[in-house]
Length: 118
Image (cartoon, rainbow, N blue to C red; front, side):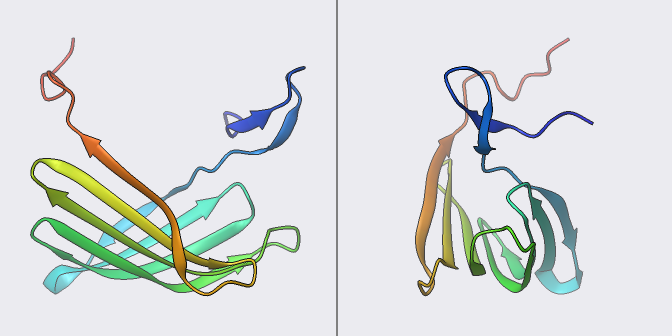
């Protein structure tokens, strides 16, 4: 198994794991979706949500964390396709704060990305 990505010191030693996640999206009937995600920083999330045309909205149903993980209690994610761009917003309740914006991104398709490479 490959090592998780991390933030390195100048000498190459691992300072802390980088943010990453691995998981599964489980589509359900009637546009519902279950998402299970695990993070190298010590927590696991279960999201429930809904898939609609050009929009996916998810909210945590539960969060489990290790003893050494930072305080994290809840998350909310919104994905939207707007004018050909994928927009993503991630809100979290952590470190004593209520749900608030944490990360966001705007992604656009790269020219030629839809072509199959051999």
